[in-house]
Image 1: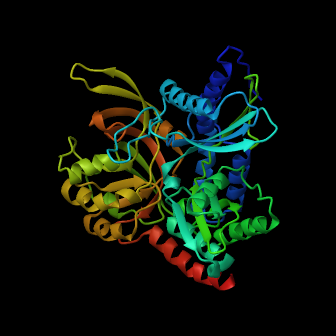
Image 2 (image 1 turned 90 degrees about the vertical axis):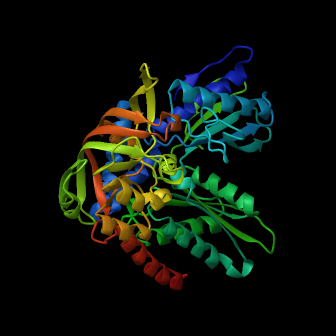
Image 3 (image 1 turned 45 degrees about the vertical axis):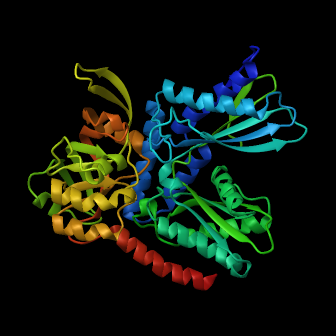
Length: 302
Length: 200
């Protein structure tokens, strides 16, 4: 575990900036151990020749990125942060956001990283991976706590383009949810760089279901929803998705997904929304904890 | 599956015809990097590409690079940082024009082309190579040099000329004989879905 202490007067904002800049590059270069384990298990389980060749190439690529300290994938994505802000953390979220934005820009310029951010209509570049409402931040507020957890998920476009929403009706039931997830992943085929993590958001509203699907892809690989009913659905969908035969890179095989994670919310009696967000095999993720005194611990525990 | 080594640009169309869907290929020589905006400029804005694409191998990419110098005419020289491959399906509508008007013979990307590409690729003697998406650290080691960058104002969606060595592994996803692995995998998966739905 790496520890950085920042004690200057504007220390806390600097610490968040420092953490964001470090997390963005770290996530792009050094994929988490849980993902490495899942990819190794996938390679052991695959039986198609092409699938094995692809999974071995992925393994080789991760080793080369480690050795050369290079990016695992060229798509530096859009930076998506998840912040868990303690009630007593002495920096307002407005300043946290400013620091995350500045950190993202600094990492992009200093490394340098490819800058992907464009205006949605003119398609002109808007800056070093920042722009209007970029980066994206998910916020969570924690009572009786004075810390800040920050997770950075650089989200590539190949997988993000494979996002799907269906407003199932209550009469579609759980079967409707399962069918929609299955057909979405089959239709996505090789485009999102399978085998990856299928994030599913169910319940809430249309927008919230998609938000939850993004939360789901950002979880450590193979973690389970605390609600046993939802966890059971995660297990079932994981099994079913791997029976579709889409395989690594969509070229056929046994391993279509590394995992299926579901996040849920209670919903209206008349709603049954299902959102699917895909995360590619290079499911990059890095986290840090920032204490109220500005000290940073880099870890990967959420 | 057979293994082939092919040097691009090719001059003999038979080089493409010998490749069959599912074969593995290693590529030598020169390849051209393009992306969405590059092709939008060529086909939708009618700007002729300032580079000969005859017999070419096109890679769907937009690399991470570092600018090393600028010459007297303002053209930059770039060194590689990380070069990888993007999703091809977004750019499928340019396939026929690339083959028919410019003589492109191979397109390489990840995720494949939908079935609409099968007929023009067969008619024009073209092939689609699947690379392992996301494996950019490896791909970068196989690119020896960025020899030319044109249309720099589209950065990073320029026209890139790379010299490569042992570029691969590539899998022939769509061959010039009307076969597509993507079509076959999708057909089987849709049959399988019917079976899975019956079990739900």
